[in-house]
Length: 263
Ligand SMILES: [Zn+2]
Image (cartoon, rainbow, N blue to C red; front, side):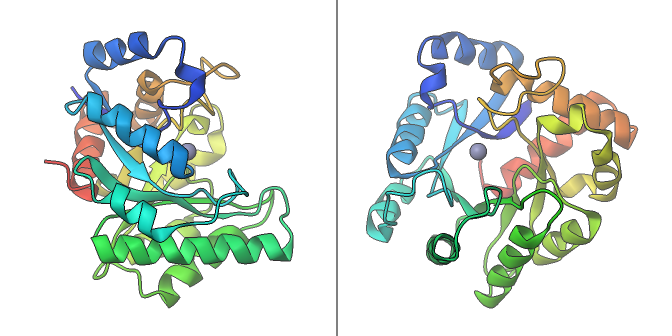
């Protein structure tokens, strides 16, 4: 059984002291991962780490909407990085309205998102989409869907995944119509409100992830997350979908390989 953590940040400094041990666990438990970049420097680190373990990891390069407000998105630098063989996606990019950004900041978020959509189309790589609305609102997702449609980003021009999905069925339906996959993370293990959406998304469009070092699943909640904990996300999906853990592992791994064109 192989599990695929489709979104984590093993290159982050939170793993500097014990990265080797964590990678050993990946081998022991047969877990593969995608290291996701959040700005140019972190994207370079994600690629460099993946390069050392070509049988275990791949990388994505991109600029997160509000992790690094200092960086100006330089498409030429990202293009060069994205052309490397182990880079399988563009992102994480998107819209983050969680901390009520100003109009100027929202404008910047949208501009860098559009540039990354363009890069994904140009290089024919999928997008890793990060959307985070403030509590009780869906507008980050709605705005992102509107932009994707406006930029003509759909199943015939590109593909992607709505990472750390935390919205309603109606929103998931719109992403599925665009051809997107939906990725579930640690919170599904302790928040029963995810049951309906997990039941709704068809098995052939679900990815699993940890977003490590953040958002650890139960029973590790509140501590540093790591890719091996993707198992708990898979278990919850198995429970809600009434499948075996092997079936969930097989299908979500297949989906990940298909979306990211990993041979
Ligand atoms: Zn992330």
